Image 1 (cartoon, protein in one colour):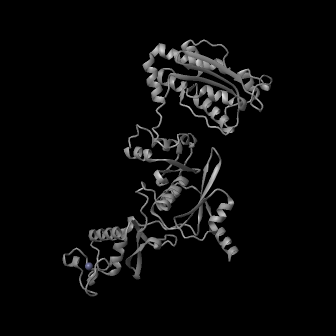
Image 2: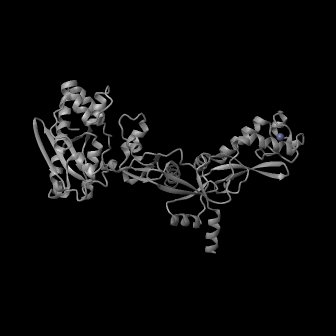
Image 3: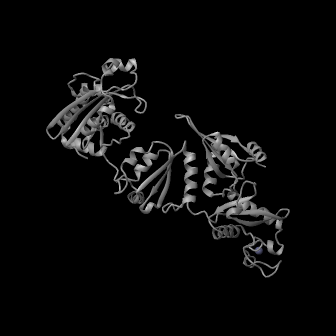
Length: 476
Ligand SMILES: [Zn+2]
């Protein structure tokens, strides 16, 4: 941050969209210690200027006809702003326009930015309005030629001085420091990358030394979430440390939150980042399936890894991280309910019909010795496990969950079968490709959980079973 060298900037443009609209005039007041210099130029935007903008700014097509293009002015503008703190009223607008003009020329423009709207809100919170016209009246600023670039830049400079007169230099310093709270970037991470991360949902990947993948995270706002890893005042020490180890950042945009969650879950399992402890372990996911030995006589069978498949709608109970955890859970439930460990296969007895150990302690109700019928035992087992019961896949085949962003009108279709995420399609061709794919996705706990939760919100669903049948006919 360099408050000795300030550039007060204002632009006039053909409209409000920094990507589609162009600059028609630029005015810069630079203050370097005591030295003040003023510069401005009309800019030929190379496109039409809407009539209402002409009325607002007084800049007509005739005026810019012979003006230089932005390209012709770029190096002069760059030199004037280099090393200066960029100050503008609603700075995101002016800064965004300039960045985009430079980007079109294949150049990068970057500066520390201070917004005088934000300054005004912070320092004069008692007032509801902070547009330039309100500031002119409130602070008695001297207007030369409102809505022309240099005159408006001059007004911002006047406002800046007025703050110091009103509230003192230290109040201004504090407000500026608050606004410039620049993320603390580790050495070796390109600062420009942070400007490119969009305010959109998606997944981000942090790479460290030797390009090792450190972390995969998701957010409905990638930019804010990534920045939070670099904010010195973040409460999470672990997050901060992770940020400081980061050397490279990648991200993938999604249409919405579900897409981000599914992609995050998948990438973590595929790529096994060093710092994702929670979602990483999935090697030996286990569940208990109840199978009938005889009618009503239910016995648990442990399914692990690839055997776990809820597409068929079997009676499965609980999701456990390992065989050990599954066995431990069933044993606890059995003991709490007086079920027989021997009948459940959790304890070996010397021969059939012999009492189990718990029966001798009167902790088993006697299914092992015929005191309790195996059908009653089976019914009690099912009741005891009821709250762990997994939801069977309720569709005949794969479905597509449609996720849509109403603003951008982008759509993604998440293809799911048997609670497994087969892939996400953005168009018909990708959808066909996913449906034609023969790979067997492995069931995983996180995806199951987030899908059961999401389906309860009644999203838009495409039933894809028929289409799958069609594609199979084509292939064979
Ligand atoms: Zn027993």
